[in-house]
Image: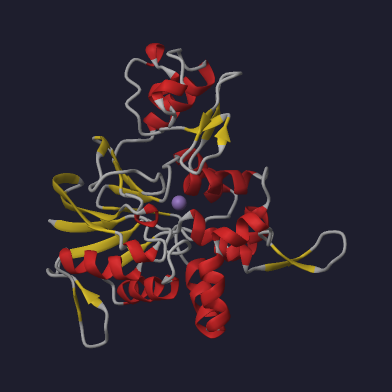
Amino acid sequence: MKKYDVIGDIHGHAVELGSLLEKLGYRRNVAGTYMPPEADRITVFTGDYIDRGGENFEVIRTVRDMVSAGHAHAIMGNHDLNAVLFHTLHPDSETGEMKPLRKHDLYHTRLHQTFIDELERDPESGEENLGWLKSLPICLERDGLRFVHAMWDQAALDHLRADGLLNADGTLHPDHWHELAMKGTPGCDAVDLLTKGQKIDLPPGVEFINADGHTRGEARLKWWADAGDAGLMLYQAVLGVPAEAMPDIPAPEVVKDRMRQLQDTRGTVVFFGHYWMSGEYPTVETERAICLDQSVAKDGYLAAATVTVEDGKVLEMSFHSVKARPAAR
Ligand SMILES: [Mn+2]
């Protein structure tokens, strides 16, 4: 029997992370590392350690110390990958000039500003932290459980492995950051699916306004949705769109095929984050998919699932969370 404490998106909220670990029964040792309350217990972090909140380095130190001590696994989120690309230089194909793999445009700079601020104050720790982010695996399988930041897509993982972009331990091969930064390359597309999920175009004329106030003609695929009878599958059952914005029409064949393909790969329970869920506790999306992102960076909660497993079977699961501090926004 083994217990996993799975923790979702933290986004620079170190105080909430400490409170949640305490709530789960973890205590700091003399070196300041959080130790589990029982020997057979381990934490898995599903990624997005940084951005939005102001305590990026402190979060990384907490998580990193636990990983080094053998009390946690940490996987890579899209913000963590973005940071790696933002701060990695590569020669421009035409001019040879060294340029960042992620453009320092207004959008990416704003999204990453709190990390940039900490990096300017403490460049040495910043470089160390970026090195650690680079070393994170993109997925993890343990005791019949699967962990990924956004979407478990076996085809995407197989593709990355076959192309030599993914090492056996799930880490990304350091020679390929350039390809992973280039939209439209198979490697970049595969990593995007795993860390950001999939978006689907809405039918012509259908739009909705998302939580950030932007009008969107595409929506996130709820890859975990129980599609039921695929013949009856409706657009609104499989897309993250407000019901009133979405006509009650069947999804096109291409979406149904994709759902069937993703369902085929869901033999085990998948834990993930990324989707800005609301509410104090995670909800079980389906019996095989549990999202742990309760939006701590949008005045929500930092959440965890404590899972007891034996022989690949989940025996017990409980949810825990702490409220975001108003001041941290
Ligand atoms: Mn994310």
